[in-house]
Image (tube, rainbow, N blue to C red; front, side, top):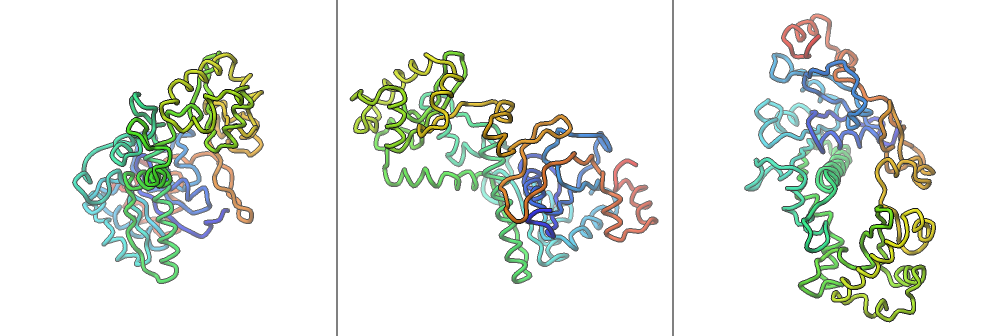
Length: 382
């Protein structure tokens, strides 16, 4: 069920953005076969492992006899492969792009790394904050004078990594179905997080609002574009960028007649600090609930800053059925939405190796070969 029904993806399960990419494609209806390493949790429930939802799981120990050949057999009917190892790991296993595309010429070979397949840092260790720091994206994430911080995993792993890999894989599949030629997708989080800055870089190039050395090239530090703490210690955000929205914010706050808040003055970076302090005092005069009653669902570009649990029960999010609770675990429903081929809502997460027998049967692996693979340890613990 879903727009990608009929697409098959083989995922070499690892950590971080590569499994999330697989989840995105599974959410959209692709048959994602997750090739997992043996683990102590073999056969145990794992409702917390959201990135494995919607997939079928087979356990292979690729260091044991017969496992690599079996992995190559999985590729015979596949459209794409996802892997997130350091450069060279798949080649050492005998499963690099050359071997896999030789086996399946139309295969789209998706590679997910932090720094990419080449370059001075390609083999260096790193995590999300390292990649977005190198791309310049982290510099934009915090108000001036405060240590740069971004929400963990979202900007690098998820947006700059998994989503770009998913786009690359889908584009590659479209091309392969046209001409039968597979290719390698080199998806690096430094590349993706840099590409995500295109809108901000276009403003920087035009010198819009960023004319002084004291102003960071980003939507931070301005009194009409920041977070404020309320009287109850909870936070709200306003981002009244356009003149009409800024005017509406001033009107709702009773400041429309105050010359120091005028449209002509607000683009002067020297005014941002003092005006931010004034608005900070105003927002601290009411609770977040009171500000929501006054400003939410208006053209002031206002929202409360919600926890994940609060977001799940917000009326707008509930009306759109954004979240589900499956096996006691809160998780987002698939996105985006399709009018003709809707995606299925999440179900229970398969345990490690849950579909091993089913997948081997589809490959036509006989009982004698299965027994041989088990004795060799290629299928993990019995």
